[in-house]
Image (tube, rainbow, N blue to C red; front, side, top):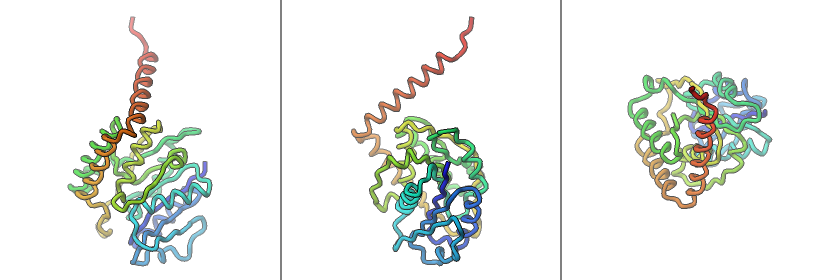
Length: 256
């Protein structure tokens, strides 16, 4: 298993270097994509540590484009799995081994870090936006998805290599939603690992705009539900679910 971490960063000078050092201790390579920062984010990594690659976008293209550039680099370098972390200090690098431990041999599952404690610590508007997004994304996927807005994930290369990315600025956060639905439709298992989520008092304001970005997610989900091209993947997913349910029923002990 060859694990890369991809960290998109935009104006994260206060938190990035410590996060990169922590992540590097648990993965084979770290790829940082500086998305046009103006606060010295890229310079905070100099001199560049061993096992760390810095990619710089000339302007702010959004989180989706930064993630995609990092994914491409990791795939070209031979990664088998890609860990993603937010650069604002919310995710603890020491949780990476726990996410990787959820993988099984020859596993193509997507591992999602679930912030079980977010209801107690996250801002109220963020909690509502996340719950609202979870509902709509679960509707599109045809199964319940928990903490769909968590950016702490482990992606299998089997999923990433099937994606076709079309850059649109509005997709900054929607892209991660589409990845989840694509995983479900593609037959990839999704597993959850409890993680802590840190909301630092002195951190910069989140780039996630609760009302705007959640609205964009709902619009994209509605498009998925109405898109006839996705009818076949949805049908395949439904059939797989029925087959699994039948297998579980057959394996269950019978009562005499």
